[in-house]
Image (tube, rainbow, N blue to C red; front, side, top):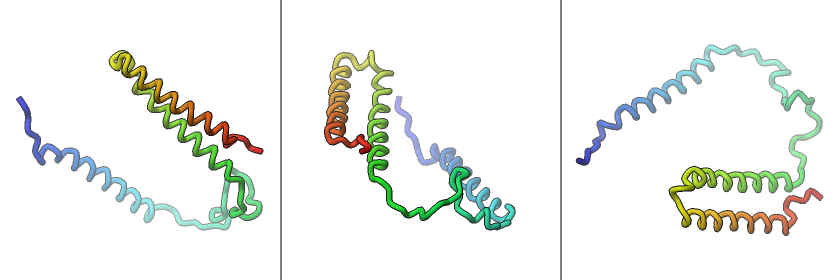
Length: 123
């Protein structure tokens, strides 16, 4: 027996989304109008981890920082793909193991490429 779902079945979900959005809008408006408005020089100045601002924030710095950050995110996301495989290891059988070895081999080749290009060297 197959059940047919109609538009009326989605009403609770739509209602929950509307309530959540309404809560966000009401909270933002209420805090804007009810919150204190004391602007001082200290509050309007730039603040970074308790350190006094020195110099211009627009000074250039090495692109290596961004490169390392992007590579970290790339390899970190790839490792996340291994969790579902580990959870379903027994059900996937030998075919799943071969596919994961291909995946990890591709990751290893990418990492070797990054090392050969010396992308992680700070000098």
